[in-house]
Amino acid sequence: MVLDYEEIFRCFRDELSCPGCVATPDITKKIKRFFQEKYCTACVLPSDKEKEFLVDILVCTTSPRMLLSGSDERQLSFEARIAVESELGGEGGGAPNYLARNVVEDFAKLLILNCELKILIFTSLPLSGEANHLHKRVTDLHSVYLRAGSPGVILLIHLKGEPKKSQGGFPTNPSVSLQAEDMSAFLFAPEREFQRLQL
View 1 (tube, rainbow, N blue to C red):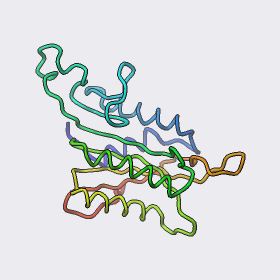
View 2 (view 1 turned 180 degrees about the vertical axis):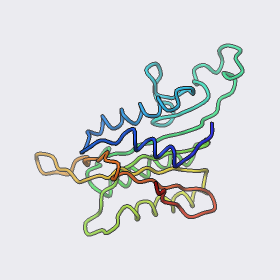
View 3 (view 1 turned 135 degrees about the horizontal axis):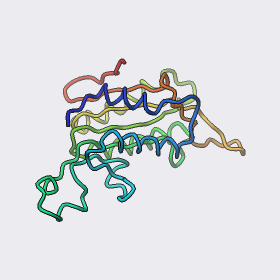
View 4 (view 1 turned 90 degrees about the vertical axis):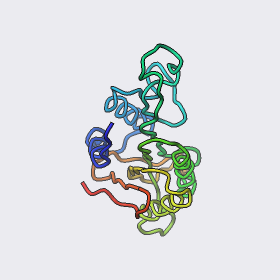
């Protein structure tokens, strides 16, 4: 499997883009469906028949449940090719600092996995008075990446978020945009500064 990071982002953006904001559960379903369809010749977890394994989405050579069955050579090997985590809100996700914490927790899962490509799909919100908050969040994640020893290539896909409040006036999970112009991507790779992908 040859991985072209710009092509993955381009396909992701083109497949998922739609006008306006979409409910978080619907975005999560769209993300899972994207990877299931794009990598349909591999084993993509979760699926209709299998649950999540380690991360939100795992593209691997075979199902972990099939490792001891049959004599097919492909089933005897097990390699994780792509690991995906998505964080679009979560517990306390309406508050910018809690959302940033949730993103870092999911990012940390990717740092300890061994696979060809790791992808973090996330949103962010600015702190009060914070200018250019996305650059700050990506810089913070890159700092964590470097402190972890730059473990492999990680593609970050950012979906623009807008603050949202409940009927009682309390912050709740952000509204997330799937408009193509509201998506951006960054690439972390060993021994170089992070790169913003320009499409």
